[in-house]
Length: 119
Image 1: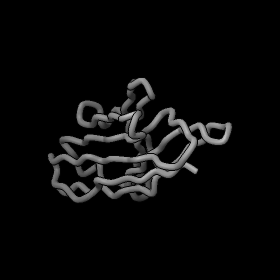
Image 2: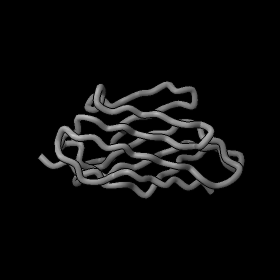
Image 3: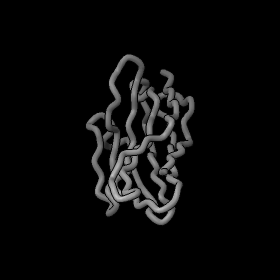
């Protein structure tokens, strides 16, 4: 089994910064793409940023220029540096990883971490 554990959420004022981290653990797995999604109350879960094993990134238009995703392949971790935060960034942020485990690729999710941006 592949487990994802997030950390780093919290309450911050508009214009502030937060750094989210996610660590994958388990045994006998290989991580492919990793990413961050978010879900605000009453809205669908949406992609925030994704990064390939080779460092190719893709961002939602709403966070381009403010958020930076990075990863450490040796540690199976992914980070999301969030700067210039806005109240509309308030959501539960979920870590996601596509991993090869027991002969197949599957998508795994963390439990989510709350990010609240006050105006």
